[in-house]
Amino acid sequence: MAETECDVVVIGAGPGGYAAAFQAADLGLRTVVVDQEAQPGGVCLLRGCIPSKALLHAARVISEAEDARAWGIEFDKPRVDLETLRRRVKTIIAKLTKGVQALAGSRKVELIQARATFKDKTTLSLNGSGGSRELTFAHAILATGSRPVVPGSLAIDDPRVMDSTGALDLPDVPARLLVVGGGYIGLELGTVYHALRSEVTVVEALPRLLNGADLDLIRPLQQRMERRFKAIKLETKVDKLESRKDGIAATLAGSGGSTTEVFDRVLVAVGRRPNTEQLGLETTKVALTAKGFVQVDRQLRTAEPAIFAIGDVAGEPMLAHKATHEGLIAARVIAGQQTAFDATAVPAVVFTDPEIAWCGLTEEAAKAAGQAVTVTKFPWLASGRATTLGRNDGLTKLILDKESGRVLGVGICGVGAGELIAEGVLAVEMGAVAEDVAASIHPHPTLSETVMEAAEAFHGYPTHLYSKR
Image 1 (cartoon, rainbow, N blue to C red):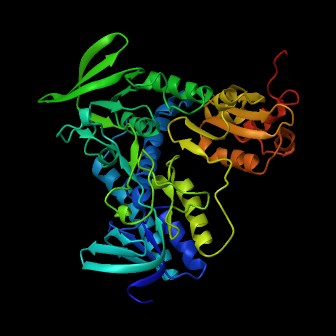
Image 2 (tube, one colour; image 1 turned 30 degrees about the vertical axis):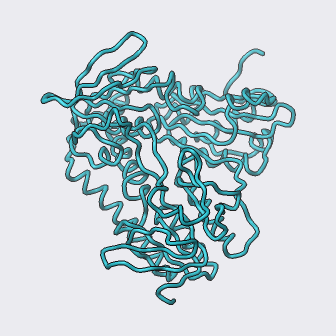
Image 3 (spheres, helix red, strand yellow; image 1 turned 90 degrees about the horizontal axis):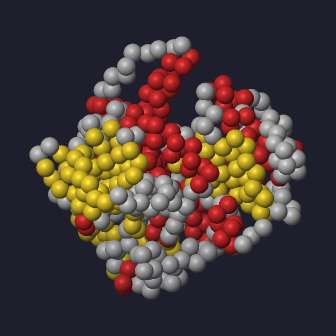
């Protein structure tokens, strides 16, 4: 491949970027990936999904050891070696990044560590440790991801105030931790630090946790967290943070007025913004929304025909698997295939304890749209498998078309919900009806049976649940 020419250049080596690059290479296109990081993988692998899930696994081990007392099994109080835990997470990251590098090499995808900016619609300026150069391309795919947002009022110059990246580094285990934001990042990291013995307080400005998730699914999680965390303060804002010798003083404003509490560390997890600045996009026709997302069509093409955008920069939801799916589509479109983004169900998973997962239509969205639906639920109190696990704090919920019984949405709260939701995605995408799901034999005893029994409720009664109608 000529040094300054390629069929496709992918800017960003995250799960969307490298998936797009590998697919392009598999389709016979000369492909280059440019990323500022020394290792591929993007935020998800390096300081997001993977390290957080590794830490959540450690938290789950600690939690299960505590819960084992109910079975007559007692362990000594866990002793956490933070350095070993950090090293374990770094080992996982290194293993996975080496895997991505090996896959790139096998496909002859060139990886370049540099900052890329558009000189014009067919040329990139690359600036890296090896110097500067230009790269011409036939097509480009923007996959530059997103970064944490820290509001100006909370952006004080004190290392004890962390974003999600800083929290994942595990600088220490604070005795008192304030989590600003009741979204999935704040709740997942709050779960980790609570297991490591932090006293956790969550503050959320909205009247509910996990805005956008189904309230029926949130309820079991919130109840468990209220028993474990020091406090969950809804409809409360952090007006000010102040550095003190004894900690970070946070002024909290809620319905009862303002109070000031002192914390050893503060995690600010109020959202993320797309990385679309300083890319030279003004030298192209690429257009941005008011929130900084790149405007794309169903083929992920921008207003500049040769430039595509995928993942977080292309809009909500900011999820790694959505980025991967978009990357595959963009590469196929560039290769001349007739395809477009038409996913009906993009699953979302919150890896707390219990987990929450959903896909397709939610009950609230159906009501807001005036859509006639039947909602069926199967509480895990009636699940044999959940009972054997000692975890009846779950719920499986189906949103079904009122007339046909077609599965429009699935929501699950409980242990392993993130794994179970794939069945829901398949049901929604395939246009399955309740009878299809109910008539599909599910193994016993499993948590997956709760999906089958929730479907049985559309036409009658689930085997393990009865109520007068």
